[in-house]
Length: 279
Image (cartoon, rainbow, N blue to C red; front, top):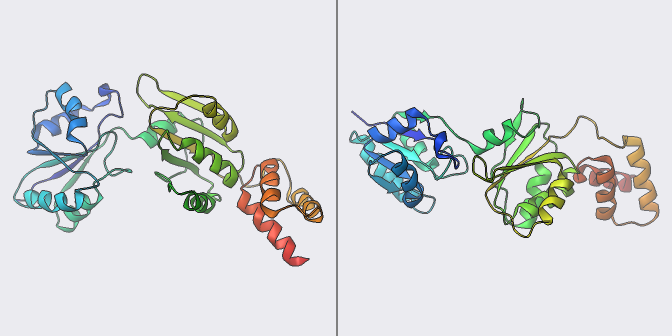
C-alpha cells in the first residue's frame, strides 16, 4: 500500500498555536519534509518530536519531490511543513503535492495557522470576499503593472511583503489605488505583534518615521468602491479638461485627481486619454 502525504500547518511564531492533531501526526509519520530543518528544530524539540527530517525548499524541491514520491509509493508516511503557517501558501511544496496527486497518493491537510487569514480577521476590513495575491513582483515596472491589474477588484486585497520592501509597496499602491483604507499586520502572534490601520497614506507616514522595520508583513487593502468617493464623474471630467487646458502632464494630472477622488490612478488615466482623443 502507498503511504500518505500530510500537509501540516505550523505556528507563525507563538509555539502555543500548534494543534494537538499536528503534534500527533508529526510524531507518527516516518519522515518530516521541512522547508528549513534548522528552523523547524526549535518547534520539534519543544514538542518532543524526534521524527527524522529532510530539507525540501524552493531550491531543491524539483529533485527532492522525486525522492519523496518514491518513498510514498513504497508505503512511507511523510509530513510536509514550512517555516511558519500553512505549506504551499507562498511557500514551497507545490511540485511535491502536484506529483503526489497525479500518482494517486493520499494527501491529507492538517489545518492550522495562516498569516493571511489570521491577519484578515483582525484587520477591520471586509472579510466576506478577499483576494490573496502573495508576494508582489520585486521590479518596479512589474509591480506597477501588477497593482494596476488588481485595482478594480471589489474584494479586500491581501499581500505578503518583506520589511525591506513594504514602504515601496504601500507607496506604489497609493499611486495605483488611491488612498484606500488599509491595515498592515506585522510580526503576527509574536511578542511585538502590531496592526497599523487607516488610509494607505497613514500606513506610509507611520513606517517612514521609523529607523528600521522588522518582521514579515501582511498588507490588507480595501477593494474598490462601487463609486469613487470624493468626486463625481462629472467633477473629475471638469478637472481633467481644466488640467489639459493648462498643459499639465497626463501622469501628474492623473495622480492629483486620483488622490482627490480616492479612486485608482489607471482609471483616471484612461479618462484623460479618452478626453484627449475626443478633442
